[in-house]
Image (cartoon, rainbow, N blue to C red; front, side):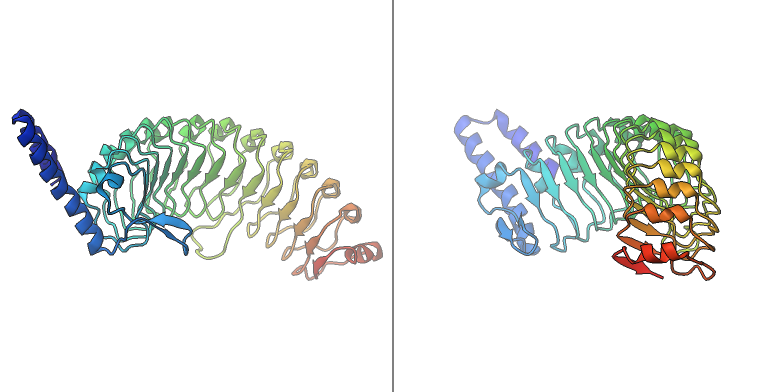
Length: 381
């Protein structure tokens, strides 16, 4: 249908001027009528402001407005199929079709040469068409919560891509070619079936956020050291037994989520020790290592000058290093459900707002430490 429209237009170019104009108008009217008929089928109203979702949604009924339409929001209409006529609107820069019933994204999406933003999340799409990977102006692709099993190799062609969200799919393998999209700043691959993080991840030197939570990754590659701009790293609920020493070279890291939410026994980190190099992360503010099997902490943890939150709950710690008292910016400390029998006397130097020491059955506190607890706003004993 879509190609028929263009073929009719081309066939009319050799006709007389007056006849040509009238016939092109008739073909165009039929084309737009089909598009608006499709919109009526799904009760897609004229362009309006949806106060519930605080955004504009729908399709304008005025054909001139349709022709110059740049932002298209068709989210939450229960759409099962997108009409090819939609992709004749060549000025579109933003396409939002999230939370529908789509099983495919038409290959004619490649006609939207000016497309910069594409959100098709919360559908049932099983394939990301490779044609999308040739839309040179794309900077945001959101395909989370679909049924994707593969990432197109051609993803690396998207030189302007900044955000790629493919979370909550069925992806197992990351093709090396995808890492040629070197300008990615945010990469979200959480809740997939990835078993190995490619060494080519190091090519994304502008990466700022990396979310790999809820996969089956057993180790992080040494090439992670090249992610100098990384600020957030989420690797919780995988199969990690350690963190590489190269993590200490990520000087801009603000957050490390390496704990577990005990839901699926197959996706559990079992980290026993931390590399001493973690102490070089001077900007780290949040470190979550809950529900691992940590046996000890390196003395270097006391050099994390910016650390504000430290979650060590449900591990196997029987002692804390004295250096923990040097964390002058620490406000939240969870050391519950460990094997602690005592705390370093120097811990009273910390100006905590919240402390959880519950679940340490044999923990004994000195009189000074008991008085110190009274200065903390929230204490769980």
